[in-house]
Image (cartoon, rainbow, N blue to C red; front, side, top):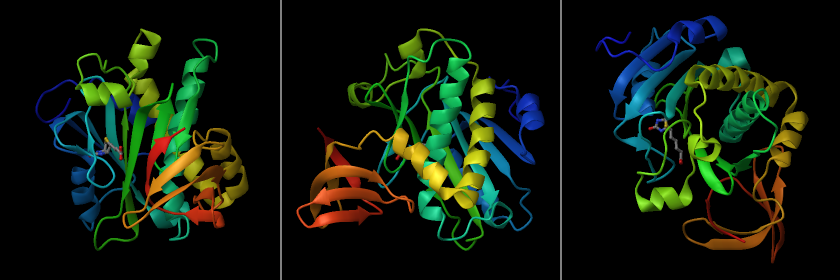
Length: 270
Ligand code: BTN
């Protein structure tokens, strides 16, 4: 039960028992779990790893100026970690969004395959999105608390049991929810536990076995083999996507040859 008396739609005891979390904070409503997670991460005595989970967000944030819209039934949470125990150095951080995206793909894939044939394929869209049937199912927002570079916040939003039928038209066009695809809900507790466990395993592999992790995100790459338009702010680059390299960079065959990009907004797909 949360301090407000609101009964969470997730079994927090089970999440506690089946993950390595040392602290869970549940909110019926929050502006943004990442905002709250950044506050928690800023506290000197923060007990980590911690989870901030919200039943609903009123001001969910995405990369840049993006908003994250999601109604009741979605999974919206932030994972707060200490980087040193996981062996994460500054070199690994640019890959963390992709690593988290891969964890979401693999966790949901496995969860659904236990209950039905593997008809659905979850894909990674560089640098921080999970796609299903060519539309966005989940988004990742990794942030570093200012003044605490030894900690990180990994915010994840998954359209799980929140039907998008009543969502604004632009959201419906670009996004997808698992319940609208399958026609039946998924246990939010099971999905959350599966994602958190996979997340930890993938983060450990991003340090211990980078090549294997790279092969797995390559296998799920939505952009590979497509013409990509990448908005870099001052300029736009167009090229054939050749994949994602071991550093998490997008590799494009442009008019200048093979180029690697660590940031940018993918504008259009072919
Ligand atoms: C994106 O689309 O660019 C990333 C979206 C990330 C959304 C999640 S929901 C939980 C966490 N809290 C936020 O405010 N954002 C992230």
